[in-house]
Each structure stands twice: as structure tokens, then as C-alpha cells.
Length: 410
Image 1 (cartoon, rainbow, N blue to C red):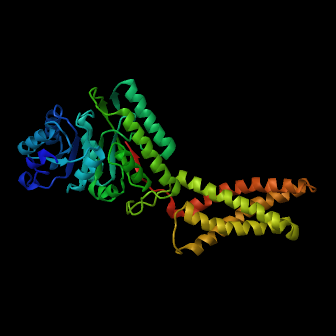
Image 2: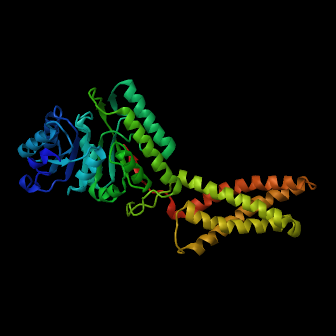
Image 3: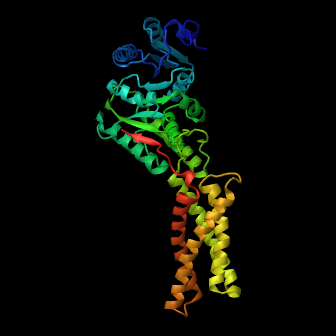
């Protein structure tokens, strides 16, 4: 039982403070921050009063603090018209953001760390693209040109290694996953939050990966950032949790089960996921190549080299188009299947020309070539045809799966 529950309301009623609905709700997640909470909230409040041209709200999201943090938060909410607070029974930054953002009515939702390491001058540039509707999510980045960062070498190395790991394993396009300075449109948050499983520090990364894979527009803002020397984050535990999160998301990507359906903007084309497409296409192509070689070897004695090559290639092309349609480009159902197969057959003609041309050239240059040489030449030609096939499938057969303009970087 939480003894503070009996003394403090869970959420300060908005009707008590606001004559106009806020456009921006800035969430400040806290855990045992009795020293920094009041000066930081007052500084943030004064900054928004002076610089933000619309109604705003500051929500202090308390993660089960055991010190005087909730009492200070309640006092600030009673004193400052634009401040309210939310009390949670469990720790976790992701849990705090999920609860605060889910309960907010503001069209733009943001959060920042209570230590205010990020210069508040970047707050308006952060939320402006969301207010205008240009972007869906905005993040502060400490790793972009134009950012000015003051922190120790240990934190610098950890941050850069983490983001490099994300780029190499999950092929992300955003530059700084863990900067505590982000914003999202409420309509986007309503669709994203139910899909994010993590409730701690990996929450940010998971939300961004799902959003990027869905083709949502992510706007990056270079920030000035000064490290808090009194940070109490358990770096080792956080790093291990992040690695588990990366492995979990990686498994979803490998299986094609990342929950992005229904998230993309109505004015954007579906995302391409080029890396995933290449991996899935490569797997389908490998199976198709093995099937092609076996069929050619089976048909060659009775049909001769050219007919055997054509029949084997045609059979595998039909199966390959169907497999790529479903597995590589994620299309389900029968809609458009005949059109896709028809286009796939034209792509097959290109592959046939490459392989048959290679076979004809071999027989012209070496009439007595061994059967193993024939197969080797055909495999090499088939690999070249496979590359051409992927490009044609992606650009022409399944054009609606090409990536839209999903992200912008400042």
C-alpha cells in the first residue's frame, strides 16, 4: 500500500486550472527527485510561459517515489495553473510516459528529463513540426551536426556505441534513440503505445523502431546538452535490458511480425524495409535456385539443355513470384495476384534471356563443355538474373511497397 495515496489525488483535475485546452503536454518523469523537481519545473514553466504561443500543460509523472517528490509535485500543481501531476505505483520511465500520454487530451505530447540536460531553446523547434502536421514524432539528437554536447568520455562512448549497434542490427535511420527529449502527436501515440512492450528505458527505442518501420515521419532536432554528473541511472542494468530489447525487436523483424499494420500516414506509401526485403528475397531466391538446379538436372536428359532451362526457370519463376509476393513484400489475399504473376512472367523473360544467352555463349565458345560447367554457368547467370529480378519486383511488380518520405532530419 502507498501511504501517499490517501493524502494526494492521482491527477490534478484539469478543470481546476485550465480555461483552454492545452496544445502541448510536457511530461516530466521522476523518481526520488526531491532536490531537482521544483527548480526544474519552475524553470520549464517560466520558459513555456515566455516562449510558447499556445496553451500548455506540464505533467509530473511520479514513478513510485519514496521521498518528498510527490508532496512537492502536488504543491507545484496547486500553485502553478499549468502544472498537474500523476502518481504511479511502479517504477519505469516507459510506464510513466505510457500512463501520462494515454491520459492526456493535448494534440502534441512531449517529455524531457527532470535534470533539464537539454537546452530548452530546442523545445519549440521540437514540437513545431508536430503542431503543423508535417511530422509524426520529433526527437532531440546529441549526435547530429550542430549539436553541442558536454559529457564525460564514458557516457559519450556508451551513447555512440548503442546507437551504432541499433544501426547495424536493426537498420534504424534515426541518430539518437535515448536522448530524453522527444515529442509525438497524440493521434500517433494512441496507435503506437499499445504496441510498445517495454516499460523502462528501452521504451524510447522500441517506439521509434515501430514508428520508423511503419513509415511515420520522424523529425530530428540537434540539441545542446550538458550531462548531469549526479545521474543515478544503472548503466550496466540498462545496457543489458537494452540488449534484450534489441534482440526481441530483431526477432520480430526477422519473422516479419513487427506490429506496424495500420500505423502509417494516410498520405504516405507503405515502407519498403529494404534490409528485411533483401534478406527475405535472398532466402526465397536460395530455395528457388536449388529447385531450379534440381529441375534442370531432372529435365536435361530428356528435353535437352535449352528446353530444360526454360521449363525449370518458368516453374521456379511462378513459385518465386508467389513466395516473394507473400514473404518479401507482405501482400496477402488474392487481390492483384494474377497481375503480379503476369508481370512476374515478363521479369522471367528477362531472366530467361540472361540464362539462355549465357548457355548459348558457352556452347558457342566451348561446344564440348561438361555438364558441371553448364550448371556452373547457369548458376552464375541465375544469380545475376536474381539481382535484376529483385530490382524489377521492387520497382515495377510491387510498386506500392516502396518507401514513402518517412523521416526528416534537421
